[in-house]
Length: 208
Length: 272
Image 1: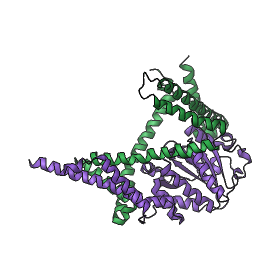
Image 2: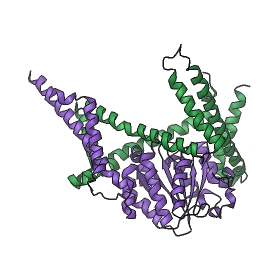
Image 3: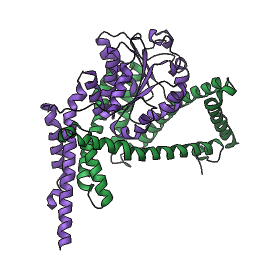
Image 4: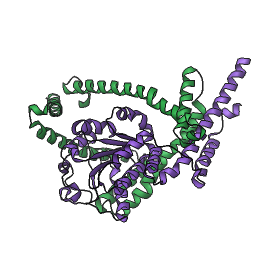
């Protein structure tokens, strides 16, 4: 029963949503049921966020032991940050000055800084690893340089042919590859969803 | 030559910082054209009539914000200049605050909350939430972020499902992104969708643009700058373009120098 009940719930829920999406004219009330299930989905997701927060707290409380973890202060900083952000939001509201200060002056600049720091890693990695070792690498290298320069304003200054070549690379070979990957992934998604729906794939239940 | 291939990374970092900083201090004013991706996004907003309602789904994280937020700012500015009403939603937690920041600026400029724009807030559940929202907005969002009853907001008059918006614009740095909106909203409600994404997501969403499933596509800061140029209102994104250009040139230069060193070393070894 520990497996059969969740499998039955998954099958009925999935089948209802599928039925409503594709065959709604056959059973008008399916819309009401599907809508209710999806609203439940958002509520369950809300609880999942709470569960994730609890898990984060538990794991990091354990990691704060100086005997086991030399960098015990990292989880402490994380928990303090979490408490400050969540506490000010829950008790004072997200329009309060403390929460606004934390978001605008700490969270947002830190996020932007993380994004901006990538350019240094990219530059360093590109300089060391982007080598014309064989024909494939040469093609990749030339394409990369054309797209990088052609998609920035400097490309138009070098020559109008450069943005045109960059556009061609993005809109023809790159697009063809992307489309193939998307279609393959979509077919895989349908197969995986079907396996989960009929209970062949039970990985989501945990265990083996 | 070997030294060129093994330049100390700190030197690379300094060169890169200088390359990006210089044009920010002394703008070069490099010209750039507006791509068809951006132009079609601009046209979709521009052809809306005063009083019509547009949805803006703010689904980007703070880390991707510098690349996507200027796009949303430009589109919102454009919509307000056309007297188009804008409803904000978010399926990523940070999206709520980004919307609040845009609304705060618009309120300072005389816009009225609840009439010209409103922020309905965040709902968890990603694709399931988007689907539930599309079917019955008032059920998923009974109240907005300010605690107002959503149904009582003047801007929500006549808006019950996603199909009641004239245009939906989605801004994303990951999931949910254009694919989720196309699957759950565009396919079912046939409402036009235009998307703004972080630069790396641009090429992977191009197939949706070519197939006509999205009417416009903004990709990164460059597209935000193009949008500002299309509006004839150059702003922060346009100002950052020179810095982006010089950053690209610096990286290309590093790659070229690295390869000259590599090929020269290879030639020497081959000669021996």
